[in-house]
Structures are given as C-alpha cells and as structure tokens.
Image (cartoon, rainbow, N blue to C red; front, side, top):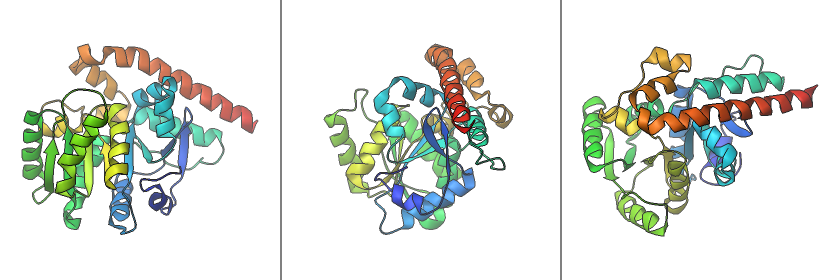
Length: 274
C-alpha cells in the first residue's frame, strides 16, 4: 500500500499483504501488529499510522461503495478482523503460489485495542476516545483504569449523531487537539469510522484506528463472543443473536456478497496463474 498517514513507516517493517476481493490485508499476528505500531508511533519522523480492522461486512460494503474501496486500497493499513477474512487471505496466497507456508491470523479490533492499551503503558502512550455515548465513554474510561492501571486516557468526545461533515471534523479536532494524544480510537461503526479516522489522522498528524464495538465490549455495555466462537469464524452468529434488530440486514445481505466477491477474486488469481 502507498500513501500518507504513516504508510511509509509501516512499509519499512517489510510486511507482506494478501488480497481479499481486491483489498490488501497485512499478513501478521496480533502481537506483532501491536509492537510494529508502537515502533511506528515512536518514530519521530512519523505523521501517524491509520489502522483499519476490516471484517467480512467491510469487504462486502467496499464491493458496492467505490469510495470505501478506494479508501481501503490507498493510505493506511488493513488488518483482517475475523476468521473469514484471514481464511480467504490464506487461500489467496496459496492460489498465487506465494504463500504456501504463510500463516494468516485474524487481528481483531477489540483485541488490538486492549493489547495496545496494555503494552502502551510502558511507552506512556496517550489515548483519546472518540465515539459512543457519554455514559459508555465514562464506563469505558473506568474499565480501562481498572483493567490497565497506568494507561493514559487524555480525553474523550461523544459526537452528536450525524454525517461526517465539516462541523463534525471541526468539533472533533477542537476536542482532540488540546489533549495532544499519540493515538485516537474511533468507534462510529464501519465504514463511517474508517473515513473519519483517515481524515482526523490527516488533519492532526496522529495515529488513528476505527475499532467499532470495542468500546462497548470493554465498557461492559455489549457482550463479546467467547474465544472458541471467534476462532470458529462464527462470531457473526453470536452478534446476530445478541443484536438481531440492528444486524440482521448486515449479515443477511453482507455475508453472501462477501463470499461471492472473495470467490470471484480467487478465481481470477487462479486463472492468471494457470
């Protein structure tokens, strides 16, 4: 991947990528990703890194929204948020005959969020939380201080519901800038949070990441799937069962779209190598 927002610093780490439905994902592990991001943030020449944790729904959305796909294929780093995406990464590398022995593992946004809160303590990393309600942010901040004492939360902002217009960005910058964070966590739901985090990183020269439900999980306002369900690739079933009214359309239409487009891209790779 090329572009601004820290992509150059990330390229220096020599990570390879795998394409899923034409979208590049980093081939790495959770712990390696966290350490690499910490190194990139510590680089005095860095303008920050923009991270995205894209799952099957994100890929499905990108196949019908050209602006979102352009974002995922330009600046920033995409991690596979879930087993289905990492599984197709393995298949893509195998089809391309370049990754027969490469291990592709999920790098989930909620897991990355907590690990960077934890490991960032030794670097005095300063975190800013953007998204969710004021009540959730208060619960989240208290939970972070309880679970990761010493983690530095320099501020938070609950933006009013609405579009990503200039008013949103001005108010967000006004809330974030005086706090001087190293990292801004954005929880607005995909794809909205990915557009927001990229633009905020550009304006503030700070590292950002969209982490969706991670705020609710750590705040205790939503239930996270058990590890064995996440490993099985069926986390979406658990989330659908816990939030059916909000998520049924996402999974009913998004999952088939993801599979169709991922399979089509695989077929093109295989045909090119035949």
